[in-house]
Length: 109
Image (cartoon, rainbow, N blue to C red; front, side):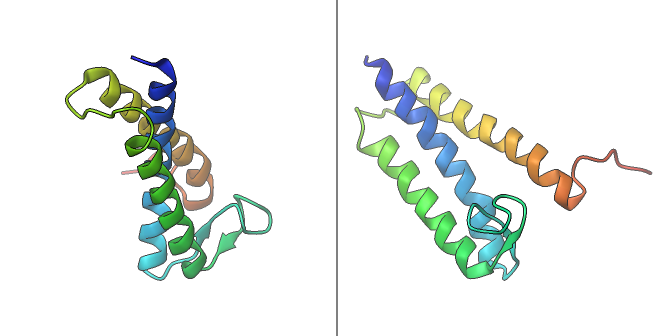
């Protein structure tokens, strides 16, 4: 197995997971942070920009997983690389965007 394949699957998972909040926010008509906002990653981009950004992230994730190497969903190392990329970008995103949407504050009951 080529270790570069695992790197590709890791980043494929990261791009695939990053597509979700942008695409969902955009398709529900909500503005959301994107690299194209001012300031980047902090300001809000339109719903249309987020749909396009989410779609492009999904395409890149797909290409990294299906066009590099021979991804096998039954191969534990392939799934672990993909899943780890998705998990890490999700945690980083939760921490970053939580500061803008109240997700980093402890819940009060």
